[in-house]
Length: 93
Image (cartoon, helix red, strand yellow):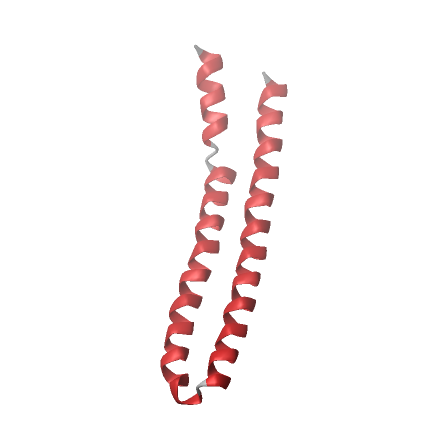
């Protein structure tokens, strides 16, 4: 039983690391592409810069929210592991 619990916990740690790592990489790439496109659009039409900047900040907030959702799911797996709960329930029966 202890070996199964240890295996579930170790796989959960790996899953959490992958979730947080991919969220960080995805956010970094998203911000890089977003910033590049903003600079391109501003260089082409400088008179639209205030409108573009507003849209940039809205999209940046949404982009950052995606990674925060990943962090929230990771915290759920870390502190209240549903896989471990299911394992202990199945073994108890």
